[in-house]
Length: 367
Length: 234
Ligand code: SF4
Ligand code: SF4
Image 1 (cartoon, rainbow over the protein chains, first blue to last red):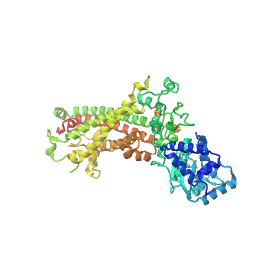
Image 2: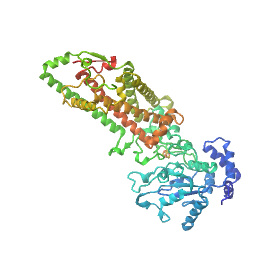
Image 3: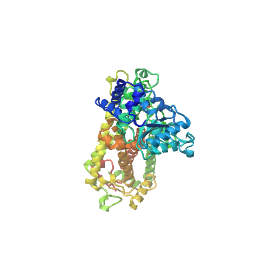
Image 4: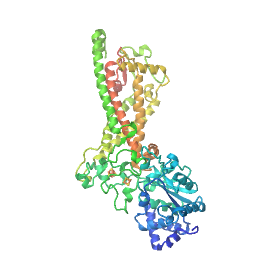
C-alpha cells in the first residue's frame, strides 16, 4: 500500500493507459490548465506515491457523496474513487464496525502528517457533541483526532464549509462548520448543497497530483471554481441587461427563458461554477431548468431570506421585512414628520406674529 | 479655531452683515453631490426592483444595462467628489472642515445642540446665529454625508468589484475584504439598501430644514450655498 503510485492503483483497478491519459487531459482542462499540463499530471500520477484520503461524515444528508459518485466522466469517478475507497469512507468502503475503525487508526499512524482529511457534514457542539455520534463517540472528537495528523482538510459542501441547514437559526444542536473547530490546518472549502461532482473531483485530483492545495480566495474556496458568480457566466444574462424578466412562473417570459432576477434568483450574489460547468455531466443547471439560483454555496444561505425575493428579508430587526420596506417606512415617516413640523411651525409663527406685531414686521422686512 | 460655533464677535453677526462662508469648490461639490445622490437613489431602486419586463429580442434592448451604467457613473461622481471634498477640507477655509470634524469634546457644542433641538421642538423663542452649521445640522451632516457616504462608497464599490472581478482595483480594494467581512454578498446588498434609505431620509429632513431655516432663522441659508455668502438678519 505504501509504495504504490496513483498510476499503479488505477491499472490495478483495470483502467487502461489510454483511459488514464484521457483522464489527465480532462483534469487539466477542468482545472483550467493548458494542454501542456496533461503530461505533467500523467507524470505526477505515475511517479508519486498515492496520497491516502480519509473521508469523514458528520451531521449531513450525504448529498455530497451522492454528487461525487455521479461525476460526469465515469473515468474521473473511477480514478478518484480508486484512490479514495481503499482508505476510509464509512459510506463507500466495504469494511464495517471494528474492522473499519481499525483501518482509520492504521491510516492515521502509517501516514501521519501525510493524508488528506475530507469532511462531509459538520460537528454539532451542544450537549458535548452528542447530537452526532460516530462509532459510539461524539463526532467532534473523531474529527479533532483525524485532523491532528492530517496534511490538509477539505470541507465538502455547505455543511462543512458554512453550517448549512442544520446550523440555520436557531441552530439547536450548535452545528459548527469545520474551520471553527479545527483552526491549525489548511482548510479548503468546497461549498454547495451539494458541490458539483466535477468540482469535487477537480479539487481532489489537483491536490493529489500536484501535492499542494489549489489557490484559495479569502474565504478559503478554490479560486478556479468559486472565483466568479453564477450571474457573471449565466446564459440568461443578456435578458438581464436588456431588462427582460420572468414576472410569474407561468408567463410568456418564463417560456422564453428570460432572466429570473425578479423571481429571486441569487445568481448575482452566489459564487459557484454552475453556470460554467453545469450539472449532471454538463446537461443543465437550475437556471437552465427555469428556476432561479437559491445561493446554496453562500454562507448562511438558509438565514438570508426567501429564495423567491431579490431584496431579501433581514431578520435582525425582529420582524419579517426587507431593507427596502424598512428604509421606505423610515423615509415616509420622515416625510410625514416634516409636513407635521412645517404645519406646527406655521401655527406657532402665526401665533407669535399675532402676539408681537412689531417683531413680525421686523421678520418680514428683513432680507 | 477649527470649528466656528455659536455667536462670535458681535460685529461679525450684526444685522445686515454679510460674511463669506462657502468657497466655490464646496458649493460645486454640494450641488454635484445632490444630483448624484438623486440619480443613485432612483437607479439603485430600479436595479433592485426592475421596471416591468420588456418583450422582443434581448438584442433590441439594454435597459438594465443603461440603468446600471447611470448608477455606476453617478457613483464615480459621488466617490470622486467625496475625495476632492475631503482634500478641500485640508486646504479650504475652516468651514470646509466641518464635514470631517465633530467637536465632540466641546461642552458648548453639546449645550448648543440641546438649544437647537429645543428650538425645533418649539421650546425656544429664538435660535442661535451661526456662520457655518448649527451643531444639530453639523451632527446630521457628519452622520449622513460623511459616514453614510463613506459606507455607500465602500459597499458600493465592493458590489461593483464583484462584477468587475479579480484584478480590478475595486475588487482588490473593496470586494476582497468587504464581502468576507459581511459573510456574503447578499448581506452587503441589504446594508447598501438600508443606508441608502437613511441618506434619502436625511435628504428629506435636510431640504425641509434648509427651507425652514431660510424662513425662520436669523441668517440666510439657501442662497449661501449658491453665492457662498451668509447674511445676518438681526
Ligand atoms: S437568471 Fe439569475 S444568474 Fe442568470 S442573469 Fe438572471 S439574475 Fe443573473
Ligand atoms: S445554481 Fe445556485 S443554488 Fe443551484 S446549485 Fe448552483 S449555486 Fe447552488
